[in-house]
Length: 253
Image 1 (cartoon, one colour):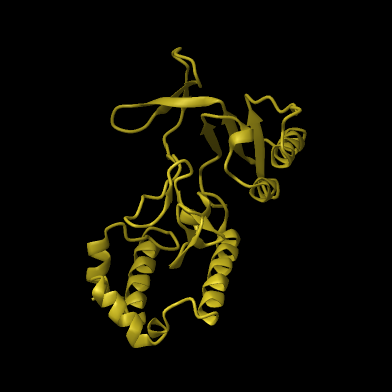
Image 2: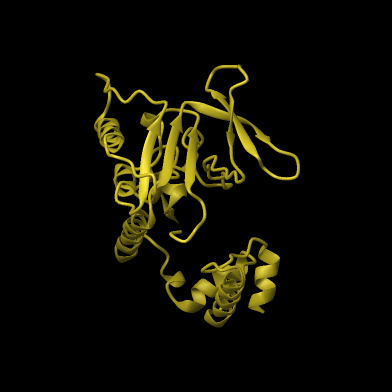
């Protein structure tokens, strides 16, 4: 946030820029942050003959960012590729993060910091009876329609979001992803490929009850929303999300 006292954020990545999961659009957007210098440290940005279009664009953006003049009054976002964290240094609190070059076993260096955040990726958990791609950590699908081992569509089963395409994208990406899946669901319904008895509200209620699921009402959701906003106001934040499901449901009731 613009009012934060944090002056520098260092993003540590085990692999290189070519392997980064962020999109080209997200990388470009970083260059438009007012009052923030973006730096790429410890990375060879030279193109390679086997680079694909996305890799070439990321490297081009990184080189362009690296050529921009910096301002001592700006905040800094520093990318450090090719290093791995091995130890949070400190006793009662974080005082630093020890990192070493990926694939090496030396003592590395300690980056002084009082705050360490982890982002180690995402893999969807397999669901019994639903085809799963263990290599990618997603449900096997064709543009949202779940696909079985024989390559045929599983009727009435759909996915969207990271379980569909993997952990990448922003809010706009998720909206387009959901719209694609819902479009196929509606098309399948119109073509008579889905059970019509579930289209009525009572059909959905019966299905949820059969699986032991009790949906929250709009009023209950509003109660959760109000409490999260209240907690956020007390901590000078937009909201503080519930992290305990039981506590959240107790608030809803």
